[in-house]
Amino acid sequence: MQLAPLIGKPDTGRVIHVSAEPSNHERVADLSESGRPPVVCVVSLGCAKNTVDSERIMAALVQNGFWIAEDPRDSDICLVNTCGFIEPAREETAATLERIARWRRQGRPRCLVAMGCMVERLHTVPEWKSFLHAADVLVGFDAYLRLPELCRQWLQAEDSFSSFPAAAEDPRGQPGLPCGFSHQPRLLTGLPHSTWLKVAEGCSHACSFCSIPLIRGPQMSRPVSEILHEAESLVRSGVKEICVIAQDTTAYGRDLGLPAGAAELIRQLSRLQGDFWLRLLYAHPRHLTPEVLDAMEADSRWCRYLDLPLQHISDPMLRAMGRGLGREDTLRLLSDIRARWPDVALRTALIVGHPGETEEDFAQLCELVRTGWFLHLGVFVYSEEPGTRASRMGPKVPRELAEERRRELMEIQRQVSARTLASWVGRTLEVLVDDRAPRGHLPKEIRWVGRHKGQAPEVDGVTWLDPDGHYVEAGQVVTVAITGSTDYDLIGKIVRTGTSESAPRT
Image 1 (cartoon, rainbow, N blue to C red):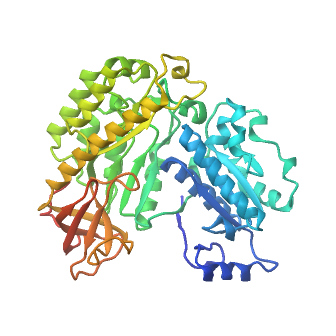
Image 2: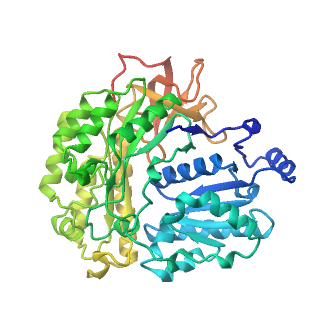
């Protein structure tokens, strides 16, 4: 598998990376003369797993002669990889499509295509087609391997897009991505030094609230050899942080008859040569075994960071959600992790307002957060998803009450985070530099932004950096003395460039 970076200049003859700057809009206008390749823009919504799918689609388009634009207004055809997991995601999908459709009415793009999870959801909830009304064409997962061919057809069709049926009208077998899609190369986007490694597709859990199995199908783990090949390619391309993801990374291999598959995969990834970080995300607590932790502990490149979506802590709620783990087992797991790694950075996701949640259930959730287990926390208001068991449960929690509970939990976590980060002032950490700091609201000495090993990309806080005279580049690991903190971020001064064995592993 060859991995192509997203290229910032057009002289390759295969790819262009167009920003929204006026000069680049003028450049695209020059390229619109007859004979230039078609230009496509892929907008990816939702989770990191969706991002990986989008990168595979872009690679296929580039291999078939398309140019890539960053801005839909610079493209002939725009593909929006939608998210339909919960109500806010559906609203974001609709708003994104409507915004691009307004640009399309002004001339570019010529064709607007909706694909991905929201489109797949129409097979079970066809009335949700209203969220996608702004798109010219809807395509499901089964068309992913044919997208280059289809894009050319859509562009040749001019305005006769109605001849292409909506995905909800097409027959569908088992939900999920087509066989062979995970073998496709990727066109890396985002930070050039940090990316995702998806090790499995779908989910076989029976959580009462979750529609993922309806959209993505049961879990299908990728072969270890295929994962290692991709990881090696990522390292060769200069990636300094690999975030291992799936719907449940700790269930990896169970569908292949390998109950200890996750631990073995971690050991295999640890055999890769190179100076880079490894990070484990989306680990279901039911499958986070001592063997998994042992495998991570054997290689210091694995960040002492765990993303454990607990969802709740009260026994009645955990049973109603179908989590397969009770309150005492959950607290024992948290204690075992903290005993093993005192400075571990824990992230979790919680749901408030699930049918049947009482004041006592919520009080237990508040106490869990107040105890200070988590450095990072996401709280979601329950979203009723047709076809799930929870949608048939009661009593319903009023939306206003659920929103109030979310705000209360996040305020508790804000205080916990602020107190914890303030205690880190004076420590020395290794930080991966991500980018230059935005100007405007930061002190002038803050020139860069990065993350220590306890901060995952996109979802957690960051570390603001004063270079203090040191030469700094994105993708570099620097040693930082922490000089201050905010509610969710750290502030530090670079004291050494490059890794330092004396710096604490955090």
